[in-house]
Image 1 (cartoon, rainbow, N blue to C red):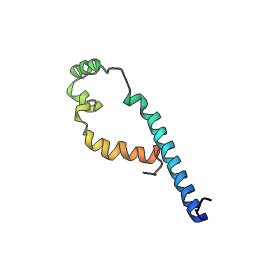
Image 2 (image 1 turned 180 degrees about the vertical axis):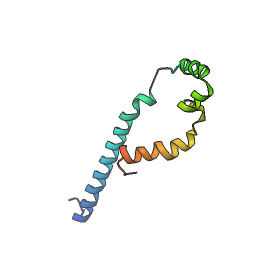
Image 3 (image 1 turned 90 degrees about the vertical axis):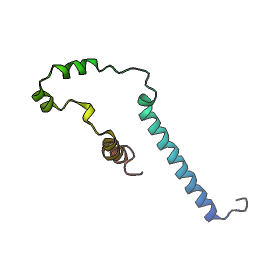
Image 4 (image 1 turned 30 degrees about the horizontal axis):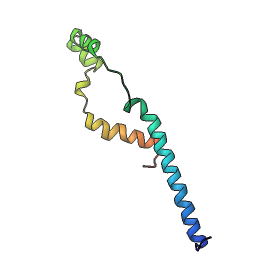
Amino acid sequence: MNGMDSSDSKILQKLKFICKKSVEQAKHLATIYEPYTFYGGRFDNSNTHRLMENMSEEEKVEFGFDVGSINWNDYITNVHIPGLRRHVLKGRA
């Protein structure tokens, strides 16, 4: 075994397995996020703005439609990332 004992060989095999799984996981995440990271389209929310302008104050409160009121830092930190860890990474990160 080229001067390696069986324990060195086992360690190298385990390391190779871990690296292979890490690469597979990275490829999986790249595939999942490809539509978002390389999306070439443009979003138009002018209809949403017109809808909000025509809603009464009661309707605005009832439907909670104003995305400007979303705390994005809180959402990313406490909802999105934990969801990724739980459902996509299955608790591995």
